[in-house]
Length: 616
Ligand code: ADP
Image 1 (spheres, rainbow, N blue to C red):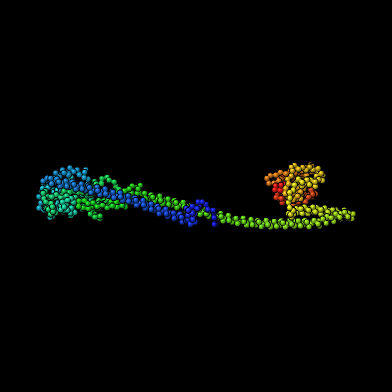
Image 2 (cartoon, rainbow, N blue to C red):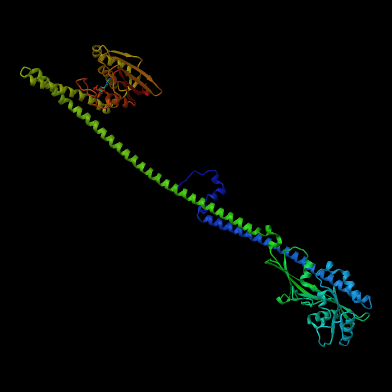
């Protein structure tokens, strides 16, 4: 249904105009809206999650870099310190012509390795020996109280080295006593590089000779070279020629790392690879349960070797749970809000379309009712027309019929009267009775026809109205009824002056005549008629009341007595045609008024005629 409404002030606002645009309204109320908003919400949630996840990852990465730096620095600086105690050993040798086992032991003891240098297995001295010196060397060490001393592994080689001091000289370190490290390629490589460069040098991965079958750890050694005092050391050749031995330290990797890391936080896992990041070169793998998703690799330069440390961790470990779950919390909260919004919108749209359906349904119903009503109005109007026409025809017929019946009736009445008068002597008793009955019937018929004619004439008389003084008419009626009034010793009183109204004087007189006549006619047999007439008014009408103390009328017949030919008594009891009150009502209604009746059977009646005041 196309509905137009007058434009309101708010509707002229540009924003309102856009919002009220049919396309916008359709979009907002359309079923796709909720999906569109859901899609937009999911997009925003995804963007928020993505941003938060990236920020968290970034923070975690920075944190991992920081922790990697810390750990790498700790390892590097610790290794530099270890190197220093090896150089201290060299200093010991250089300061003395010979360094006895006892002196070396005291040097190492002084360092208090267990307390200050955790992770180092010991500090030792390996002497360089040419084959010709082996026998004397073996004898001199045996002479120190080690009768079983021998250089291992056995066999003839071009060059030998032998671990002569290794403090603390405990059971584990004694396993290495006399070991020729030069015979092992990994150790030889570091020893020779140290010798040739004159600097500290760390070996590749080895399993220490000190290891037993239990808790086997990977290890490495760091060597510093001891040259003959005063020998020139400028060239590699000179340094080779001057080599006396190496002060060195063996390290067991796990112990070393435990010493370096101490009880530092366990938020990062890391693996140390010697030289290259391949499984075979794994030097150390920190025991941990972390399954890392962030990685960081650092390269450490340690005494001529490169260690690659692969660090790994998770945002959860690095930043703590609260911060690391933030993106997921954002995603979850966003999803909840999106879904809530979506379901609310869906529900609203459902309600809206339901309301629309109801409105449509109601509108259709209303339209149907309206159409039916219009039909009924048209039908009613047509019916009124038909009734009006029928009524008109009927009253015309009644008028014509009663008018035309007057003459034949008059003749019947006259001839029966003549018959009675002129042929009375010739009629026997029965015939005389028939003739009298016929005359009386004809006379009654005449009365009825006269009344009918008067009733019908009210429609057909087009006499113009004029001011009628009801006091005057009342007076005349009283004069007309003079005889009857006298006969019944009736009292007729006018309690108030009567008004002057607009109307037909003959009719208004007929109205008063009928009412006063009835009041007289239907008087109570046990008392003298007492009739009063009084007038009162309100803003619009006059009310003229004619009251009597007659036989009264039962309430059931209040309407019936105003209908034509409707009587409550037979003609034997009270003569009459039953048209009088019908005439009264028609006259009153023709003037725009009406007539009403109140009565108490046995006590009296009051007929009140209402006449519009415009006639005054
Ligand atoms: P009718 O010619 O019979 O008087 P009306 O139309 O004047 O005809 O009155 C109709 C009927 O109303 C009467 O038959 C009578 O029974 C009753 N009626 C009229 N006026 C009075 C009255 N004042 N008191 C009691 N009954 C009345």
